[in-house]
Length: 132
Image (cartoon, rainbow, N blue to C red; front, side):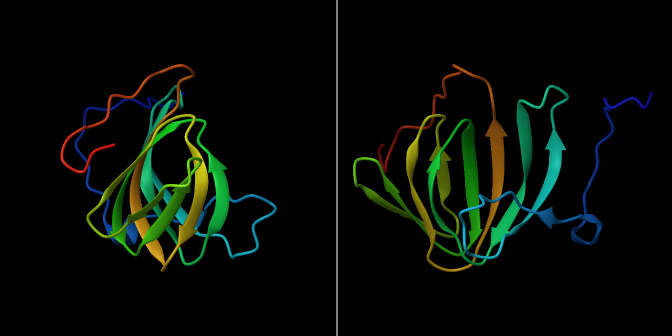
């Protein structure tokens, strides 16, 4: 059996990344995006990686917490209350477990994401200027 735990520091170069087709729902009409998972916990509760997609517009309901840093592009999110949020390059997008809304790429989007999946786990996000 291969040991999965390591204390070795690693650098993943762009040329070493193996991009896979990103998950998408069967009712989506746009082409699927690409995703690279850089790390995942052995218990599959935490994962971290990159995602890119030219077009996407769909309803979502998060069964996990996701923190995303938008590298390129803009996304518009309309939450269940009708509030419209736009996130672009340099923005951190926090979508807590249980959040619902409508996601729409305004332009092709590339993001870094971290996902934490644990039923009932709360998230204590930054609350400061910009408010929530």
